[in-house]
Amino acid sequence: TASWVIWRPPPEQTAELLAELPVRQLDDLMPQLLPFYVALVCTHLQAKRIASLLRQTYPSYIAAVLRNLPLKLQSSVLGHLPATRRAATLLLLNFNENEVGSRMSPRVVALAEDADIESARDVVRKSESLAQSDRLFVVDRQRHLVGYVSHLELTRARKNDDFRKLINLSDEA
Image (cartoon, rainbow, N blue to C red):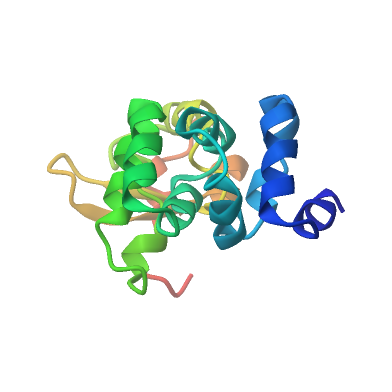
């Protein structure tokens, strides 16, 4: 695979390759590389280029790479990330590397418990952060967790079904 070809040469050579290739060609490749190796490579690149290489990856991946960079470079890369990616990455960097919080997804989509089927489906369609989730959290008006709805249940539901009947209250379902 392409990640194996990039992994083999010394980080300096990989940095030269990554500096020349169009970023769009690297969007699918970057998440396949181990974060500590990407960090080694990134020490040979400018902060702006590093941010452009990481821009399409998940904040947890960005944080894993940044944890292995010198603090000055880490700070500079953060400055070049889009505001939402920067905020999510900073949130993850505040956790100790061995804590579950350092690997969580900071972008959680929650549905209102009084939603209808169509509005819930609209939220799913408009959300880009649900790719790695099979459940949608359901909250009350005070944003307290009420339960969850699975993507499958929401997909199978008819337009006129009662959304509240889809809500699972425990993890035993």
